[in-house]
Length: 124
Image (tube, rainbow, N blue to C red):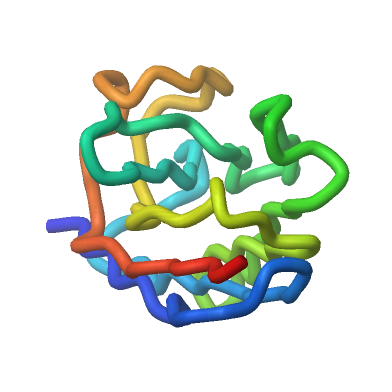
């Protein structure tokens, strides 16, 4: 059973940086797409970024381009989200997700496995 465990969320001031991590276990991820989503209070879950585990192709939402970078350390089965120039509107619970199909798609309903989430709060 695939398990995803996020870490790294905390309170940070606007303009600051954070790196989120997602430790993946219980599967062979060579054909997987891994993603980051976020959900703010009262809002729907929103796509942030995705990465093909093999090859490293990535895709990011327009709202985070130029600020957030998704990457992975395949030897450690760990996914990262480097977040720079954080804004108060980035405040949300951030979720790691995985799907065992290689198409780089972004709809949350297409992802089979989810972590428990990590809270990121950006103060103004």
